[in-house]
Image (cartoon, rainbow, N blue to C red):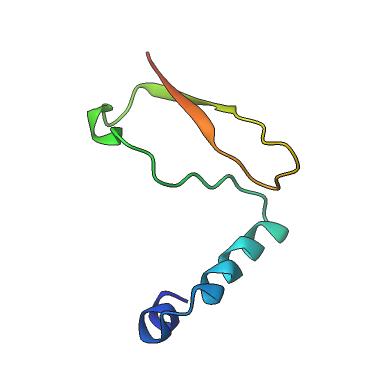
Amino acid sequence: MAKNFSETNDPSIIWEGHYAGTVTPYYQMEKMGNLDLLPDEGFKIICQPINIYKASAGWVRPIAILE
C-alpha cells in the first residue's frame, strides 16, 4: 500500500488500511507527540476518548502512567 501511494499520491489508497480491523480488532492512534520522553518500559497508557457528535472517529487524550 505504501509503495502504491508513493507512486500515485492517491489518498484513497490509504483508506484500505482501515479495513484491517475487520479481521482482528485494533486501536490506531496517530500523530502522538512526546513519546520520546517515555522510558523504554515501565509505563501504561490510558487513552480517554473525546466524543464528537455524529462522527465515526475522534481523538483521544492519552495519559502515561509511570510505574
